[in-house]
Length: 466
Ligand code: UDP
Image (cartoon, rainbow, N blue to C red; front, top):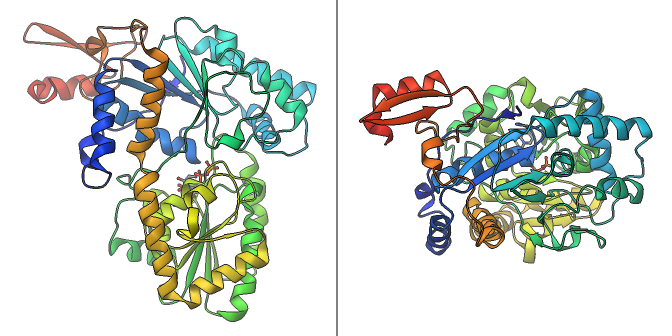
């Protein structure tokens, strides 16, 4: 069986007052018509990067809205993830092709994962290229399949695109972040454009107030001088070395400037270590360059603190899918200097939030301008925050996705009408019939649980959960 990712419980009600009532009302209304629908989100990693960030919030909220949603990940070894990173890079335009061995590894591993997907769902969202061939290998069955592509596939390497293309035509629909990302010969008729969004209530984004200063102080950041930060996977497309160059230019004018490079290692991104070592070599020459990773304890709260307290957040991407980090920084009213790439200009449309740049010199100039002119920086950041509030908060994304699900499933019988009977009342997860199930009786009715722990919590206070 594929590994499930455990998610907590969330309530859509908590978003009242943050997100427009109209969005929440429409979302609740739509969800009511989809109650009991079984949804699977399938991707390659439970941490690191934007997809994991999104699913961590989307899945519990779908459950709260009355659907039965699960998140599962495929498994693969280092070699497989080397190949999938090559595919990722090639789809974003790199010219390194796949050799025969790479192709074999990719096919064998995804075929094996296809056999491990045992349950049936009404709709399966397959994220990015890593698991893309699964419906072709497994057969579509009675499910609807949606390929959710998060990367910039507007000018893919033709050979690698042809290789992947053969498995995409079975999909019922596909979602891209931007219109221009859908390649011209894309084989799926129903293409939907849906930009991602951030979760204002996650530990990454909720207000930290004075804890932020304590967190950065503890990490060794000087709190009495200007700070610029880039938060992103250590990936050449995010141009971390370009950020260091820009910092060095700005530092000539602002000698006490500090730079924080906060980067995560993802399970499916082996290239991260190479880039990390290059940045370390640069950073070692300068004590004002701080380098942090998720592997040394810099998690959501720390990232939140950096995004909240930096004078400028930089995201100097050369190629980008969406770039959640931009909305994350703007939501904290921090001005941003970012590469004119992928979904970044959409987030900072009409000059909201800061400056878009195309090279190191422009980047340095824009950072300096924001550091030297605090009033203007704040004004831009406030406009950025308002743009995020209106467009890039999670309920809007859920509304988009449920609208698509509604259109796809209208008129189809649900696969499981008795879904309530297979829902763990404690953790909210759908419990698979094929898994080892724990059960308990209460007032003549039987309930199932994913674990002994959930069952014990239910038995202690059943009235809380029914
Ligand atoms: N991120 C993190 N820790 C890090 C670096 C990144 O938590 O050290 C998070 C970041 O806050 C964001 C996500 O990873 O939520 C990156 O998403 P984005 O869309 O910017 O880029 P992707 O990695 O998907 O290309």
